[in-house]
Image 1 (tube, each protein chain N blue to C red):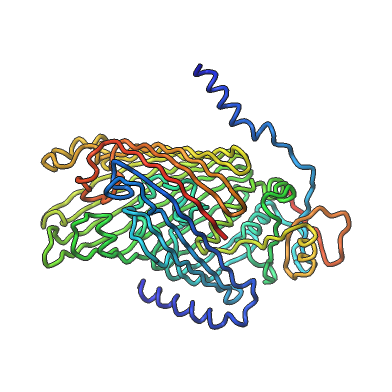
Image 2 (cartoon, rainbow over the protein chains, first blue to last red):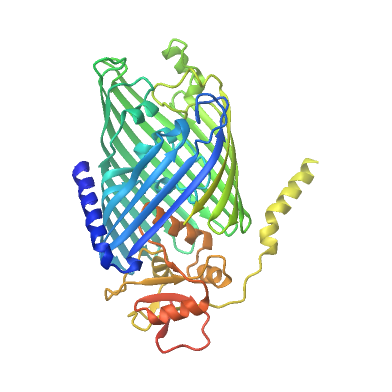
Length: 395
Length: 144
């Protein structure tokens, strides 16, 4: 289904381009951003394996949209990322979809998106790698796990988005169904560096509801995710055929005041594994996490950010005590959790030009990739830190 | 010593509150005379300026004009009429822009341009402080 939908949106993109010469200039929209930074994490593989200062913090995006007719439009974004070990470097199409407006009256808007669309279900998911919209350079890894970025950032399929104005406030409902192609390199970042076989996402089904009460600056949300993956081993492979199920339940909250803002997301993730480690193997683990992120506007051009992120890989083993026992002493207990505290500063240098500075200190390595079989060679320290500076421009 | 540092930090953080002074402007919501709606609720007005509501009930496309976010009339309009803070509205527009789910409004440099464009563009909506109302413009009433 996803291939057909993606091909359809491609075809419509080119049809739109051919029609564009006759278009009103306001029907075409072009925007983008470019950013470059420096990053270092000496005692972890978050940025690289050497711990040396890295320039692998490049984000470039160009996006366009075109109004085909009163209720039809298409939109697409080409993205270049270089994030070191965090994700594959290179260009990718982050979204390319056809948007049909189904209802657009003063109190109810309903839109259908077909093709490749961004994940709109979490607080920061739809713009997680757009530097200007992201509160911090590194988002809380509990929810926005960078090793999983290319799989979680969007899907090929269908998205429905509804917003209602009611007497109690504004209600937004989002539903999506689709899947994401998983390359071997993506699987090596998420599952284990040694995987040689083929990983496929069978489907990802998501639903979210947001409520913004009348005359209040708060927002409340719930999001649900259900996804299946399968792994087919290669002819020569250390691992076996396997199936994975990932299910997430999340709640989020945000309060906005004039000079400050506070947001939080809390999640529980159920991960079921059949096979993979051995031909007959079954395991169900519940991971949990929560982050709180605050910002204070110090001056109209300066913002201070503070965050705390808490993650446990197994809610029944919060300090990871079972990991050394289950792995014959190979996996240390600190791979079972991660507590991260971050502080950041953003400074506008000119209109649409900004610099960000950031420092994080982490106890535990539970949110360093790969997630299923951790990198034991590099991540030999329970504690690690990270600093980053990023210059960004957008238009 | 720790107490003094805490007091100094609190004083530093309070600077924006102490220095903030509400600008003395009273913007009205203005629209082209072709716009078929005479009054809106704050929630409906928010839907329009958040670029979710893209056409009027008769099907005429809505063209939204705004001033730069750091102008005092924009700040007062957003806080009084939309009941939001300007940074929230900026974030909504950026989210729409960079996720592809919508398009941002048209930003104009000054009030004179805003009035000129709203009165010459069918379906247009914007805001301004109006002493006299040109015939091609109407003021949209916001229900309390």
